[in-house]
Image 1 (cartoon, rainbow, N blue to C red):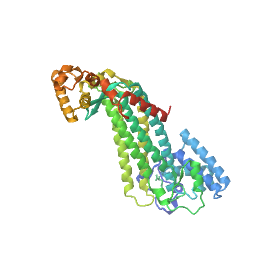
Image 2: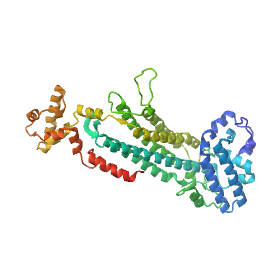
Image 3: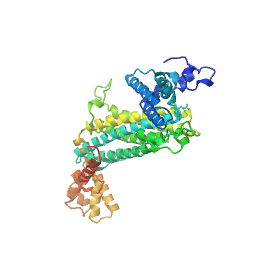
Image 4: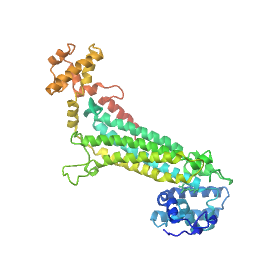
Length: 465
Ligand code: ARG
């Protein structure tokens, strides 16, 4: 990168009488981070140039020159040999300057009927659309992983918790399907966001539109947009689509974070429910016995930064008058980092979940220790004619008796239970087992293995194979 400013290289040079201060140049430049828009910048420029030629605004020779130059530039960028210049501010001016160097006047005609304002809005939308599509694939893969493990554990019993206290037995399959639902809604949110991302801003020019007879619909078609933006002031200025994306990404990361918290707990020797594959863990430099679940911990931590990016974009937008303001240059780093973080996290989780080793024995005995079938006993008494509140009271006495003698409800004798209430019969044994308990919760959406399997079948039909 050259350090001194050559005014002649700049698109807006004629008016200025002194060089830009070096720190100002560094402060205002975005090329270091927006160069990753290059592929989309070129794609957008080619679509614009083809339309200009079709509308006879530039000649077909100019178009051919532009296409030739852009092909070279694309090649150089991919090869890593493109010379990005800080004094050319951003990705747009860098590419345009190089194009002009390569093909002369045709390069200077490319910017006809266009501004960097509608150009950058177009580039970000193309970039974000691509990012959303990748994230959707990763979300689908993660959901398939969860469904696969859920299917293998449709009958594996674990404690279900409320307040992190053992509540009622559930199956691990049921528990994992809860996350499949969460990630399914995340996919819906992203698909909905994509519809609003996928509109073409080009044609808005700096802010008011342009006097050239542009065919915006043609450019939209060429770039795969669903349509064009309807107001030029809005098109160059609002970044609500990026905010929306970061909001959807934040919710998805919050879901990942909840799952992470559970994995961390479950892997703690105090629970001992699961073991994570070694490739997702690290050891301690001082305590030789430790195996730390770094990936879920970091995912939980990175959720904070994604939520932070959402806040950054909201605050970035809130004070801006119409139309474009340079503030918007600050949209890119939070947006890029949000998409990168979410995508990496989802890819890692899809593989990690598949590699979980489950200690079914530990899960089951944790459920047994927590009097998880107490509600089942109460429900049993209700079915024998007791009002629910009275049944609740009887079971509380039963639990107390068990606590005093260090036993589970299923270990009480029939005589003991009958002493608590005469309505108890021998068939009580069916509801006091963990298996009987989950089996009985066969309402749609419930934890009964048959319901879990029915839900898995439905999900299989909608998820990638
Ligand atoms: N680098 C700028 C951005 O990211 C491109 C648009 C600049 N427009 C302008 N009028 N200075 O927003």
